[in-house]
Length: 100
Picture 1 (cartoon, rainbow, N blue to C red):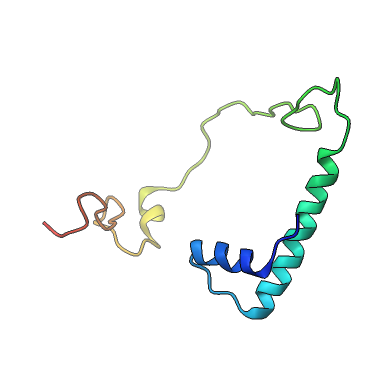
Picture 2 (tube, rainbow, N blue to C red):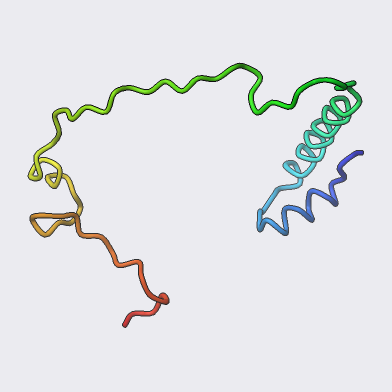
């Protein structure tokens, strides 16, 4: 299945993307190539192949949770854009968007 420039323009409009004519042409070609590769993969005989989330066996590597050195409160607040001396001050993000 080939992706047309019309398809790219439609998806760009839905995603609210402004694309130049050059970008539309290039993306149509690249996306058609991706679909071609997917078509090739769909033709593979996968009978008896177990589904996997990752092609290699994965093992979590974790370290022991040990308390280590940390910054003092004064050092942590030193470069803060705004603080009250004991904590970072950030804009309020709760509410319906209108100031109460």
